[in-house]
Image (cartoon, rainbow, N blue to C red; front, side, top):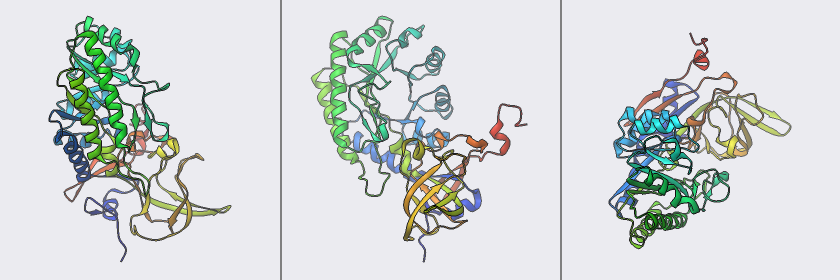
Length: 410
């Protein structure tokens, strides 16, 4: 008997019978499990700990609300994400984005977000300095998959270490009384030792600032970058060891540099939601050409851009028979009129035929959030499976929705 793909206890085939394809499906319990595992690894070692979910990774309000109900705050990168945070009642909201316009910073302040400034010129765009301010510091260290490195070298992010004191001095002189310090240095890192290393460096910089300006810190935010395995054989991040490394260096640093007893914050996105997500798609046809077997599906780079943009790997399985043995190399392609619309190239896969249901996996982060209307194709629906029930959390677009704002949508 074939082993069928289940998501949150529901057969994928049953879900698409009701909701069609292509379709993003998320497993609510998997998200909760990831949150609780992460929270326990840190809060069991340091009681003043906060997880801020990086909304940029998945901006569906229902997903964000699920995490807020678990206790998360939200890390926002735009006005729209701050609006989302306010609408769902998030208690803690951080605004972090580079090269802001004045109106964006003002909006964040007016709507209760803690503003995290990425550049030393940004305080000049604030007419009335809020009581609490934070700066994103580049500690000169970075690591990540696919070239996604946000610290060190010539990355566009953060204030360099040598100008950190100057940034905080500006804010203090203009009336700020409470301070946070933040970094975000890498992406999808699965090395626990790395996180201890960058935490140690950030505390060293915080100590220098505290001593020079006679301030303490309300919070220290060590950013995100917690990785997940995408390829078969990839090791999972040892989150217990990661928590141990970060807390050890954090506690050593706050005592050594006498910067108070700040809250420890972390801002994961991918770690919380990536593995909860599936993109379900139908095979539209199979074609052999010049030695290549092309498997066409009804989704592509307009829904999941990571394989084309980053050469990222996503596991692809037959939902009706996840254990079906491979029978040769296939190239899985989408319907977009572009030669780079390739979900998987020369990958060992089982035999596939028109009408088969396939699952593209680990798309809960940076999947729908990076989707587009390329080729004037509507965006797919999103469904959340929770307690054995599948709920539509974003409606499938119709043809006229593609032209929203042009007058043609009427």
